[in-house]
Amino acid sequence: MTEKEKMLSGAYYTYIDAELDAERDIAEDLVTDYNRLHPKEEAARATIIRKLFGSTGEKFSIKQPFYCDYGYNIHVGENFFSNFNFTVLDEAEVRIGDNVLIAPNVSIYTVNHATNIEQRNAGIEYAKPVHIENNVWIGGNTVTLQGVTIGANSIIGAGSVVTKSIPANVIAAGNPCRVIKAIPENEL
Image (cartoon, rainbow, N blue to C red; front, side, top):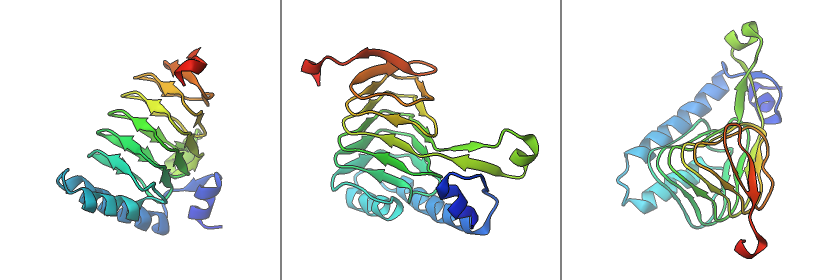
């Protein structure tokens, strides 16, 4: 099994690998080109994102700057919007639904390093997917960690650190992020 296959399967792998290095270089080149474009060059920006991401909806907007590790593990739905400084460490799949709003300075991390010091120094890590369902709003300066699902229609308050999955139809916030209250049905 290659290091890439291990990475995509959620197994321990080493990021010190020629194939993964080359793929990160490709993504870095595309991200650099994207971030250098004038914001009004919408068609060129969309072309780069469609080349970089695994899939996109027809309509999406990603404000610059944007950063990711590989790109091909990112899938965004229809009417996706992310504000400035959206960062995605996409060693595993990041699947984002329709009508999702991402505020400034939001980060999604699918990857984590080994806790054993010798393994960590040898570049060993693992990745788990992140899923953000339809109609989610994520507040500014929020970090979402590996293995998390954020349920449909939920709101994540600014400054949160999402370490565990959040159910649908709730407002959640904090470090660690926890459910504050359900969104009343008449407000959905």
